[in-house]
Length: 356
Image: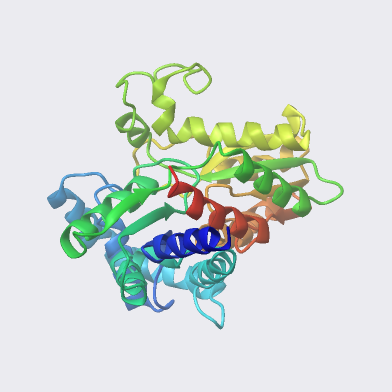
């Protein structure tokens, strides 16, 4: 029996040595200085899954217009949240990766879709540290499916493997908005951040253009085709960001017993003049005090790590506007960040996905 256990143990060890996990988050500039911010925005906005215009038009918009004005303003925003250790998103992602590594029997790496460390650098590091590496599990750190977040990470990783690591097999962790363990952890995290007294809980999700929702609709007619499209059953929901974020809100408030009138969902961070998903976070927040909502709580479940969009856009800008419009108390609940239960769940996923 002892020899059998030893043999199985050795086999498991050898299999684990051939496998690794790569967590991928959004990314950040290398510094809050204008040149670094401009470089980061160039990579981010020139992604055809972020601004999905033809290349020449996209290049004109990004390089000819946006990069001539936006980097300076964005640099100021980054400076207002920058930590001594560096970018909050990078620091928090590294802390998460370290925790997941402690709980996992597999090697765990971290990369960013934009900026550093790149996906290529993340895979290269894992391959150098694990010479027998044969298979990689990609875990995009986005709970919901969107072409500008989850999809672009997956497609970039596939491209990198094809060009640089052709012998490496790739497995991809599915978006996890409906994973019961994740929802339990998210709900517990929100519960721990709720003050004893509050008037309203706002779920603020990152916005995307309406055309992205339609492009991801595999039925080519369900999404945004009717007022109840997100609540009526359809195979389109598998790739519908709008449906998935509303389901996240429903699942969390059900777990926490929050009544319908005490919560709502909205979308932040819009860019350009094309129609984006509504309602808009900034408009709702500015209108809340006049409706008697004086004590507001905001959570941003589209992000698993705090970043510019949560710390600055919501924690600073939205807070100031809410108070200016007559609000009294504003609470921003942190993202999961390096939450212990979240790290353990990621470690579990890393091992369970390879058994499928």
